[in-house]
Amino acid sequence: MLVTKEISKIRAERWREPGKTWGFVPTMGMLHEGHLSLVKRALQENDGCIVSIFVNPAQFNNSTDFSNYPKDLEKDLSLLENLGVEMVFTPDKEVIYPANFSSKISLEGLAGKLEGAARPGHFDGVTTVVGKFFNITQPHKAYFGQKDAQQLLIIKKMVRDLNFNVEVIRCPTFREENGLAMSSRNTLLTPEQKEKAAILYQSLQLAKEMIAAGERETAKVIDAMTELINREGMAQVDYISINDRETLEEFPTLQGKILISLAVFFDQVRLIDNVIHQIE
Image 1 (spheres, rainbow, N blue to C red):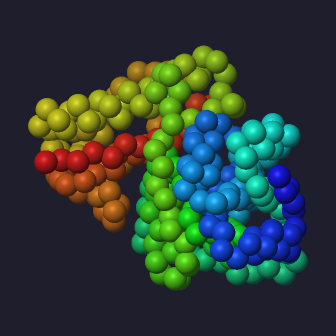
Image 2 (image 1 turned 60 degrees about the vertical axis):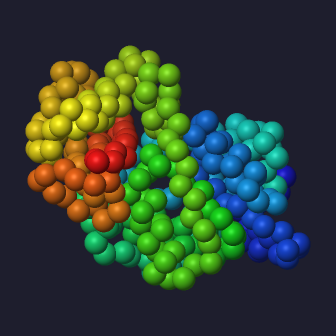
């Protein structure tokens, strides 16, 4: 397995066999079963797989959040080697953002909602680094998890708008036994917080149950979700939103294919989750 911080080595290995198909999985490390499911699918659907491990400072709008982000590169590399990954790109910040770097990819519309509203500038950091990684690795397919639903929509739009020659693949959210969406940030939770954080998925399921029972008022569903989470004293709601699945437009009366999403704090640890639901 090639592990390198150098762009030139990734490119040289990528083009050593021109007819070979490549899958790409961008990560910030601290890999869990959700990440590994993306890697396994990339390996199944392509001749080779490239994984990036880079904690991207440009997508953090909180310096404490960035400095506290969990890392275990040695463990990550062992997991990837055991799966049969051929290349791992682990660049330093100076490789991705060299001196006098001043460019960015910025999407209007989708990027200003939900996570973009809660974390200004976040998606500029995401699209810029993913765009760079696409240029560096030149993959045929790139794999992203549904847990970051808005990010997935934005990456797909960037690919369409800028004519990147890559197919973006949506992969399902992996969950802990209690329903908590797997996340590298879960390692920052205490055992009690991790147990209590099941309330996120429970609130999403409550929303689906209310809608299945006939509720169509967005505000009533959000109020019920908020009330359920607030009963859990450790949790603090950042936002709860119900939007059109593709455009992220809000609507007072629920209809069609919707995205139910939320962000919740447990002390300084911010967790996100979502589900997609089709209203017949």
